[in-house]
Image (cartoon, rainbow, N blue to C red; front, top):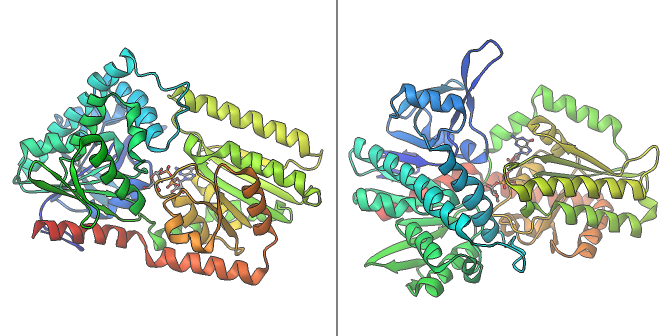
Length: 491
Ligand code: GDG
């Protein structure tokens, strides 16, 4: 039975990216790097040095595939950062993986779940998309389900399976069929939208997605809002009986529990990273060249992050407050993302064009109002966190948004968080941040100004309250609460 110290039943973790990615160094030697993304950080503690925990993930790079082949597709032990992980790589046909990832998961599912479709223009669900679902999303879910079922059986048939994210909605039902003794839990890191958002998909496709996810015993989100939307979706689109009191869906004589657990960061680990020499040196450089005010944003170049409206709001701020000219810089640290999806390539172009326009309109020979850093450079992002006066997080929708939690924790200037009401983190930090409607440019400009001119005592008090929440609801709590609920289901 799982406990807060770790599951007693064997555990199978499932995510698209795993704990290691293999690369070749300049001398031609293979090495294991840490897999990308916050999810890997969040789950590594559960899996490190545990022989009864196996992590099933996609072999993405060529070297991953080579390692998988050397182990005959079976689970193997991977060493990374002084710890060991039991990993099972899933090799996918590259074409099928492309359809799964670049046509269905990102963008179609991601766009649905963040309400990003401009419905009068897109999406077209034609043969191309239907084929990508049937021969991409379904295929990859089946490949993963085979691997997961294989691991559950190898570990005795009664393990806990913890699946992550929107890539694998079909997998739970597939695994349930093959492993009736397993306990299946699924964490969805993105928002679950209202039922109508799913009507973009043909009936069969959305039914398959929902019924696949309902193969779980427990399905979890960051927020109550997402959990309730999931129940509504099951009620409206599948005509299933749901209970908002018990937060569950009834299907085929079973109850599927629906819960929410706000994800967080490993506070001690994050503080240690922010104190590292590379971050300090970037932070000193920022401090040496700063103007009176520094607004910061840190994001992937994802459409959901609302980067263009953030710049437009800054444009409004500069128009309304000419006294800020030459005194404020907006540092945008943007990590390029999903450049295999055309909409994301176009988005980066739009960002560059808008920044050029605003800098031309307001800038001088001495001053560029927006400092655009398009780069994957984690230490620089951390350095920006330490130095901001205002952190802008104005996502259109966001499952949680870890940037807000990380930023307030390590900031050294009692900086103020300007936060979209449509982020999961707003449930926890909204009371101490300045809330914005992500579509309202005037509101965002006004809150940026209020944050820049806030009295020091109020800034200090607001940040202290944010930090207290982040410290209290840290990553271990996120995991412990899930393991405790799994233990209840198991009893
Ligand atoms: C999804 C959901 C949910 C920043 N610059 C770089 C870099 N970062 C790190 C940040 C942060 C992470 O990337 C971004 O996390 P977010 O949570 O803000 O956003 P998503 O990537 O969209 O994450 C989100 C999350 O899953 C967890 O459930 O909160 O709602 O959308 O940790 O510090 N990382 C690297 N280079 C950079 O330049 N490698």
